[in-house]
Image (cartoon, rainbow, N blue to C red; front, side):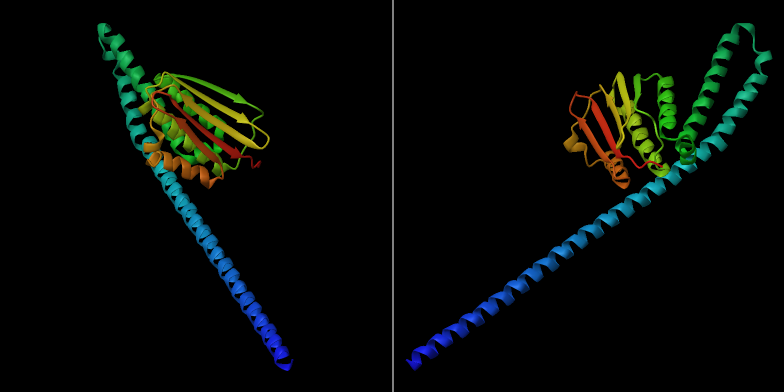
Length: 260
């Protein structure tokens, strides 16, 4: 009887010890998993912060480059063309009558080229874009492309316009400035439709062309698309492209409203 009690006591003690050891190992495993998960989250956040800082630095470098090009266009090339236009006007009285029509056409082309150059230099300067705001800057760029007469452009605005964060407006403008340029260079489109919709909780911007499109899977890692995607991520906007061979291209940006 006494031995039986000892055996039962031993079994109880061993069972308690096993339970304690299991509890220890389970606690240790859970703590290890929590720590591992925390490290993975911290690494992911650190990687995200690094990518955001890198994208921000790239954007700042690009903006400074745009500003320098803008100054060069306005201060150097623009001045040279202005002098050329002035000298051309001074020669007007010496041009024979039968050459006057060609002379005026050349003078008008030079004047128009000078005007377009100045407009381009303005849109490359983020100080100009910031002072004009997103909508007016987009409209100036749209009108510039209309004057080039490469394709028909339809433009509409819905909702009550409001101002956004100035830096975010510049980034949105740069995204669609690149988009418009790509349409002219690559799309072979005859129509570009541009929409702005001012919603209470977001700004919706879309540009859709009827051109040749492209294979998104093979091009999505290209520098142009990646650049637009990174710029969108910097301002917390959703960016998407829908396209396909001979299906045109539709670029959409949804920017969560941050009224200023």
